[in-house]
Length: 120
Image (spheres, rainbow, N blue to C red):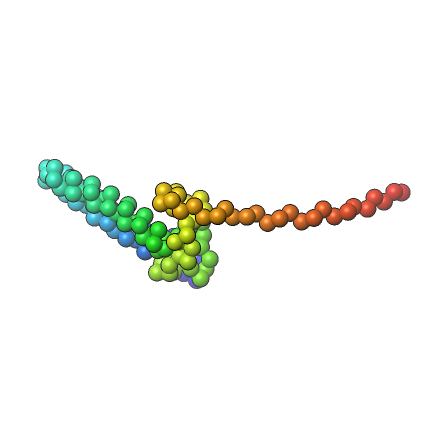
């Protein structure tokens, strides 16, 4: 059991890397705003966009996670997602990359049981 209890917090290599790069970009842009540097503002904006791109590319490489909680064996943040390279159902990032996995088949309904009518 982790410090967060028995639920999936979504910590992944893709999430951490994208977040760190985006925070660095916001920091550069903030410092450039205080200093009055237009080039620094552009650099901060580009770094922030690179953070989003890095997170998306790592997600596509299998270092992200699908929507919803993961199985307990895959919850460690350094565990790659075994289904990541095929695409995740209901994932905008995977659809933007052209990865559309086969739809998840709903289980077939059970056959109807014959009911007996009891008359009094």
